[in-house]
Length: 509
Image (cartoon, rainbow, N blue to C red; front, side):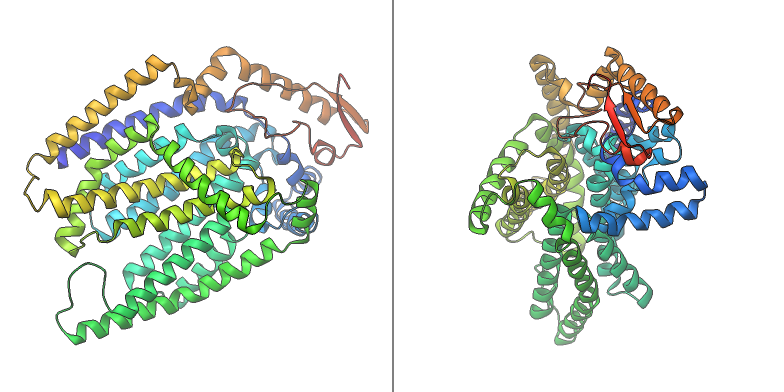
């Protein structure tokens, strides 16, 4: 099994690096658009007039109260969105796709390795293999790649804040393993929690629910003085130590939870949120109707996303790695994978809750920028679910009836068959254009990306060289989902403030 996993990890690493080539080729054609200009209106002007980094940072903080009162309460996102790379030089914006992939990759690897290598003490190549698997499907099958990776404003607001939340979860895992946190660590946890609470509302809601899950779990573990491993404590002293340890952890996480809640309230109660909701037409559903429709959406999307050919391939590749984790949990920690339905119910409730904000405000579930975040969380939930269910099968069937000697061969055969089946199905159906790397390759090959970039370079030259208060520019157009999409409004939105003009119109207006 060890050799198999090493080979699979090497193959995944090569495949992932190859998948980045089209993105690297596309990057020189990526430029800022719409809200990039709006949110960096102060920072860009500060840089143009002063070329002082401290002035830029000061105006980044100025962005927070401006949008807090007029549009949205996402104080962390507002600060980050005001620092889009184009404010220094429009050509710097080309780093956005690789920057977002790097942020997501580092956060995902740290999250996975903190459990796999940190708690279970398994080799790094196992952590790397699982991380690459998660990144591959997340990157290739994201619901709207432009809003996830190439448009800075949307990407940092969702992908970036998701990565920040993963870092918070990773820190919590490390605190759990160490049995508590010192004063410095606790201050760091509180700061991270407060920053996460200033992100997009969907991430904040999800973070709050997971925080409640974590506190409930710690409370149950402290109450029953056990480690949920299925092994009884040998004496009362162990029970007492265990209870004391979980009580200590519970107390450690309370300040962090309070800061997360306080930050969320600051975010949710911002005056700008009411203005934005009114501009968007107000709420479409009541609370009860929203809850019912959210659970219905949870069923629909968990079924649709799980039975997709990409998810099935992901599961097949995950199983060999999952088996190593399962064996370590069972053999070293005595974990028995009890109550799998309870885990699935908790995950289903979390997954369903993520659809609630859009259903409440617009009665829609196909808002792709929010689907991006939900899909990223879904892949992590799928990883946990597959591992846990396979662990339940291993303990009750495979180990019990000693059907374990052929596992490496069976896992290898499953991966090979699944990969061949995936390739044959995709080629036959002709649906490979759905994947991010293929969409990027097509955008470059067709000339769509070149035309898009050429028009934008022309527009920037006009805006930068003209002293006139009113400017007319060409309208950039692209049909590639990895460059732009219908949810991203007019390309020029925000240019008036960004370039200090009175009016910016398209040449045909």
